[in-house]
Image 1 (cartoon, rainbow, N blue to C red):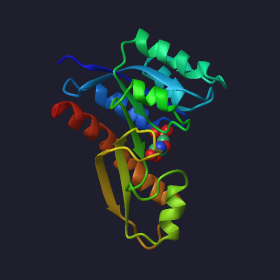
Image 2: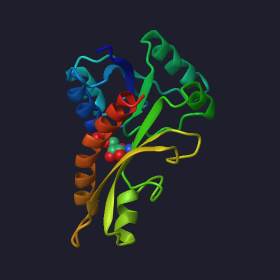
Image 3: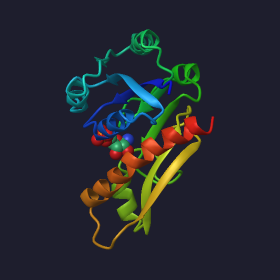
Image 4: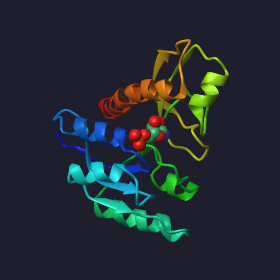
Length: 187
Ligand code: GRF
């Protein structure tokens, strides 16, 4: 199988990155992860990249050079899919257009509900019966691109932010990989 060259963008722990890396070792999984990009030099996820011997770049310059630097790396590695896995920096419209339909994101809520930050707190505040996660294409509106796949679970009565996060992330690991498989198996 000829695999799609992909890059994962992170800012934090990198547990989704780890799950994608594990799945990418599977012969039938459509992507290879050729590069990890972080905007934070202390992101824990960089240790995951090191452990799996995946090249990584910390790119955190505060001007327009930022995306130009990323683009150079992506071109060098012939990347055609970008997976945002906990990436906390907003990409410019120009960048999104350049990779139109080739950037996907994982979000810890059942979109279109709870776009943006602090989703778990808001889900609990609103006493939602269900929560979940969404994998979607990235568009120029925050967390609003076309949904590829969602996973849902029941919110129990004594749920806390921590338990909700745990449940959500367990769903995320499967959702992200299933969404990628869905994209390439149906295109
Ligand atoms: C995930 O829960 C994702 O939904 C959100 O950021 C978190 C990243 O976690 N966008 P990790 O770095 O993959 O552990």
